[in-house]
Length: 394
Image (cartoon, rainbow, N blue to C red; front, side, top):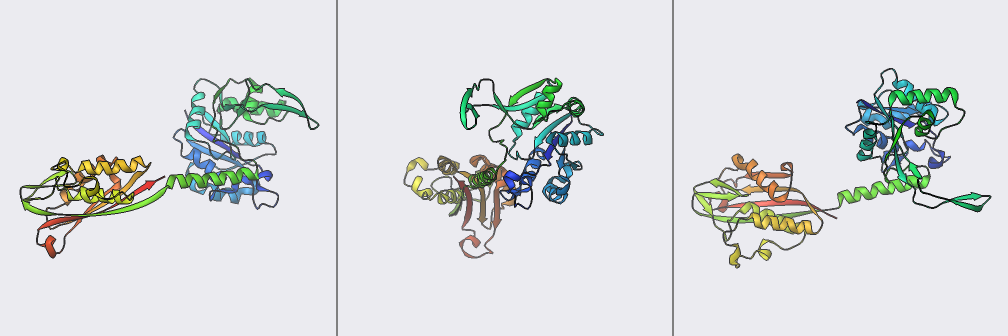
């Protein structure tokens, strides 16, 4: 089923923008991005939406082109709106009628926080109904007032707050709008009202508290603050830790690096399995949370750790980060050695580290360099490793 989002952005928005504002509220920035840009992006990024049409005020074409730039590939040509909201919606529907979708989602530009799940619910409601209306139950007490005095209380049972997008089968809602324009004297506040008047079967679907309409200057300020707080939570506190380790060679037939057994003409000496890569990375993770080093938590004097696989140490460090509500974002490891060759085993090592840390392999970097024949490394007496770990904490 083809789906088009019809976004209504033809209003003036004086209450929110203020009488001295340079442009209407739908073009005001929220978190540095125009409100309309955020609204369009919500539908442009949804897999059920095939394309988008926006109804605008004729005077706003320059503002619209700027706001729509990042999603231009998903947009049909903008349509000039009318005096009333229902006139603007009908203009958008008529523009779609030349190449109509099977379903249309009609949405107010002033609801920039519509989310993917809500869009799915509305689209799904059209499988068995002419329309789908997102709603939330009224939870506040409603009072009737006359001349500044309370005259009664309205029972809230069965009352709901309606939202957009309101979804419809295209042909049905176009017929309803055309008929309302010809016959109805009343002004309808939303498309569900026209659908009800026309006799369409409209289902109720669950709305979203986040999908609020921005109508006042305070709403704009609150939305801007919400975006800022979301960005701060998403970023959290970024910390970077570093680690270094070195192990000497002894006669043998293989080395273990990042949990991968590599055939070689010697082995590394250590209390555990002498995995110099995992040891350096463990210290980097512990350093990022200021929690000592590998020797503090796994002292070589403790016989429990003799010969143990070093992934035990690495997973313990990662768990300590999780206990603090944090995440490992990226790790970068460099081996300094004359041998063995690291390149043929790099992806196997990355895969092993990614599994230990619960990371995508794209967040695991492994590099290698020689010491140009200098020092103990140049004399092939051992291997050194340096590591950097980037983590995010609340």
